[in-house]
Image 1 (cartoon, rainbow, N blue to C red):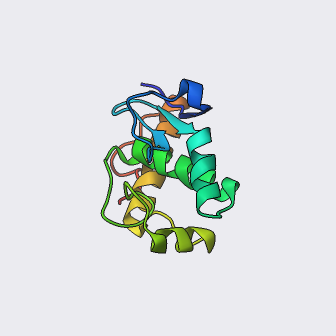
Image 2 (spheres, rainbow, N blue to C red):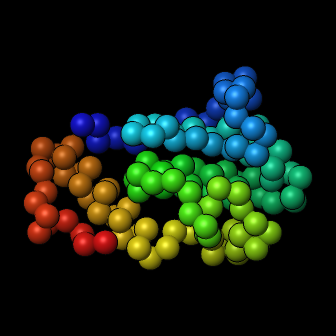
Length: 130
């Protein structure tokens, strides 16, 4: 099993044509690779007068969330498919993030991947209980 996560930041030329305009990133199911589509992130940030780095960071965090949580979108927060105006305000204020439960599950998965990479398989007693 792979114990590394990789995020590629691609330009429009490397963005799959079948993705609709609002799609700013992707994390193929079952993989350990995610993609952020820089030109789309830049356009999104510019059109909404948001800091590019802030939006790019949230897109990357969202895609890493897919890799670590192994689940789809949620109805609220960072893992929402389409961010609302309220989400964008929270993003600008540094308050758009994972839920407490998602955070616990992400920490458990990172711990598991790090242990596997070091050659140690964690027992259920050693993992963080989400």
